[in-house]
Every structure is written in structure tokens, then in C-alpha cells.
Image 1 (spheres, rainbow, N blue to C red):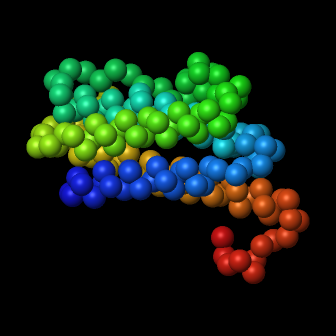
Image 2: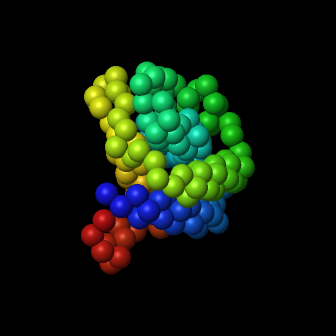
Length: 169
């Protein structure tokens, strides 16, 4: 696994998120296709928490203290605990981008570290620092796709068109 390629992907995705989450109409920020769906505000708040409390923390933990048990992390509980629905969207976008910048700065300075270190995840078993890093990038791709699905569904509803000319969605 080429660690530098993954770090570069995380760095590049900061720009993807910045552009994808910019210029959003106010009504789209909290719009949901279904009541149980996530909205853009919730996704951005989740990205902030994941950046600080999950991926960066887990990679650091695996690299520095692999023999210490993981601190539990419940992203669903954070929705209420951090009051996602009442946060300010643009502030949260900025907070995420600042956290990503901190992550990239930290990752870029690591040098030769034991990426093969593993920690015991309570549900998934042994996970290496490198695997946490790769999953961090995969998590980005998941949410970039999710954001685009929301934007497409909103456009479809707004236009009243099936949008089939654009291609198969």
C-alpha cells in the first residue's frame, strides 16, 4: 500500500469537499428526500467528528499505542450530543476543512512509522494503522457520493424532471 498516495488522496479530497459543499442553496442544507435520510448539514457535522475523533485519532492510536484498548466511538450518538441539526452549516464546513488541514499536516510529518501496527477493534478484530488510513480515504469517497446523491435528488425534485438525458443515475 502506498501511504503517500492515500495521504495525497485525503489532501485532494479537501478541495473536492470544499467545492462540492460550496454555493449550496439554504433550503438544500437541511433538505432530505426521506425523513430518515441524512442531510448536508448532518454529513458535514459527521465529517468534523470523524476527522477529529475517529480516523485521525485511530491512526495515531495504532501508530503510537497499539497495545492500549481503543476508546469507544459511537458516531450515531454524536448526532444528538453535538446537536448536528442546530449547527451553522458554513461554520461546520470551515471546521471540517480546518481539521482536514491539521490531519494532512500531521500525516505529512510522520516519516517512517510502523504502518503495520495493529489494534483490536471490538467488532472488526485486528486493524492496522495502514488499514485505518485507507478506510479514511474510502470514508471520504462514501460521503462525496452521498453528497452528490442528495444534490441530484434535490435537483430532480426541484426541476420536476426525471433527468434521464443526463445519463443513468
